[in-house]
Image 1: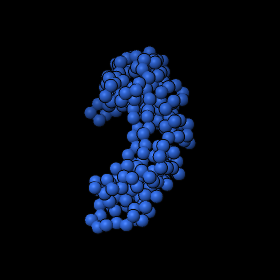
Image 2: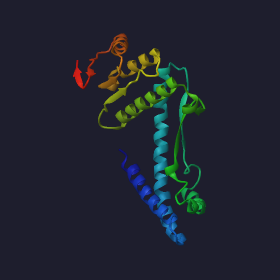
Image 3: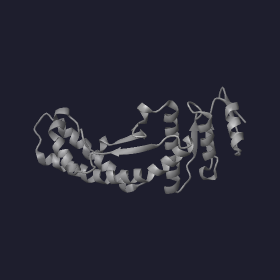
Length: 221
């Protein structure tokens, strides 16, 4: 894990909690007290923002590559990272928002309000995508996470694909199985309620596999 990112996130959340306590105060609070925590939020928040932005920049091409393979280039997808720390000073953002925050009793702006928009073309996939496209998106994200962790970590993660055939057509399922059957993914687990379906696709791909059936809590090969 990234120690600098984690330390900055912990500092930010601590300062955020203290600022929120001041915002809820029934008594007048001196500006200097707000500034103490806002400066800490700004310093730590800038680190968190830079780390997140760098990660997204590296992660997007990996994710898009997996989605493109699974969908066979039928759609384009993306990720858009939005933050109050972009293009402006986070400290200024917090200062400008303070009076409104006092009315609400909590901090309306800051990196705790960052958004990661999941896009199909230029539109939110949750609203515009079909069930199959949403499932493809989710699987591609998981595969990209696996790949990223493998590249940056010291161990190869285990991959579990639960009920991947639901909402996906046969061609996309076959593409997914082709991907994970390669040497780069190591040991994986796939679950499905239809053994014949699973057997047929795995046999077609031609990879080595074992099937275990679970019935009433009993596992058999």
